[in-house]
Image (cartoon, rainbow, N blue to C red; front, top):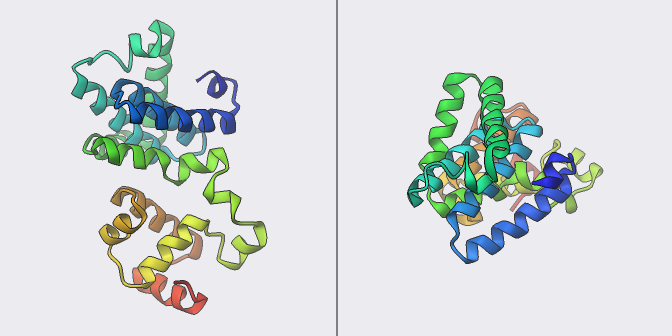
Length: 209
């Protein structure tokens, strides 16, 4: 969290990822909820407001499940200062998204299981900040050849090209359907497509498997 406050996003994301792995092993849901708020802040800084809202919703429901309703805003996040920072994060995301869109995305996060919430945190918007699979294996030339799609987006496009549904893609990649929907939205935007049929045709033309 200190790295995040100091705007060292790559280091913050890397440490959050390490923390998430450790606390998941111990099933410490309160600590995981704190980590999810950290990933939400990174998503906000990247302009991924809906993603941030989903993470906030997921964090809040984890806290509620423990019976420590004040944990996200209070003692778990180290006192009054952290409470203010958390409320400020929520306000910023809500302001950028708008009330209805924020409430919708937050509710989607609240409906997630622990495993789905963790998968959401590890999906592309958070991973891009730490320089993981979205950037490591793809250079500028390769991305240009495939319309600017990241490695993960190409995986999704290839599976859609095989005729898979969002649920089938999610199961194949071990992510949530929400994450798949987000990837497909990015594919639509980058390739200027509006239908899955266009993605399937494009995937075949590119020889994606």
